[in-house]
Length: 436
Ligand code: ATP
Image (cartoon, rainbow, N blue to C red):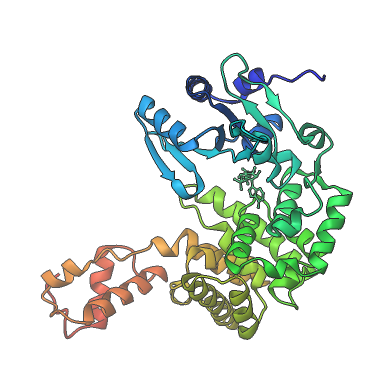
């Protein structure tokens, strides 16, 4: 019998003390209730890969909801239960969450009069998972705390850096795993195993991807786009002819490669300059991926992904804004700041960044750069309040005057509040007589 590995020291190396204590208390509660309690899945995988991850998934052999309620009560924390799935979420005061699932109870009926024996099956639960590297579990019960449980060769595949499914019907059972395989492969720098790759190719060939509901397809794509660097996974999707699922003509071309390279530069520049104004990177990548498709192709993609109406509006709006702004800026040679401002003013930061990555014209990039770093912070010294005090009758004239002052300031025609009053006297002599 092979010796079981204990990874308590590995857990202690990588997790804060209070998390270890929580895991220990869960194990003790399990012991008292007569339940098996295990940390499983991505959490264990990441401990072995030494990639810190505080998304903790617990599987209880027993009643997960009873367990979670009791734990929440003892700790004085919140719990949310989902009766339908026998799952619960523990919510800690600092916002940390721990998911609790119930290992499927399998009933075996013994012959004749013997009682019905039930046993919770961790193994059964793990067998339903996507890849071997996600099937590892750690026992949390006292006495065995930290013992690594590996039914399906997860450790070996982690060592060999291989993504493998558990059985040959895995992709048929759930075709979203095709995209998950690619995501994990690229995130960890692993390889999809040969047999698994064949199963994937076959699954794609027989059109299983088309069976994924739009909503789930979109979710998996979104997860890929949320990776640190989604590019390798997008390339790999193309190799498996998966981009064509979105639109038959969508390909990973040299042009896309270039756009995403440029996007990477723009985003690192942006993130260094604006640490406290994060943007939705996945969204920018999403727009970049679909950039170049015409309206009817975009309609098709939205339908395939069952894209929520809000996203759809935002997508069409973004691409329209970017095309328009690019066209207007490219038509002008070094536009004055007030003109660049007016062209760019309606764009979201995400749209501005994509525009910056997309344009081939340095002048245009510079305008967007200046907009982000300077123009958008400019406002005139004179406020509406000042106009009111100066006796300007209320009405749309306020907006007009304040805009004009802003443009004058952007273009360096005025610096101080005094300059602004002078400017108004010159341009609106009938309103601003001499009383400054
Ligand atoms: P990530 O680091 O991206 O969060 P994760 O492994 O924690 O990765 P989740 O999507 O949070 O992934 O899923 C948690 C666990 O549930 C996984 O470890 C995996 O075993 C299992 N799982 C998720 N999706 C599937 C699926 N489609 N088929 C089978 N098992 C799945």
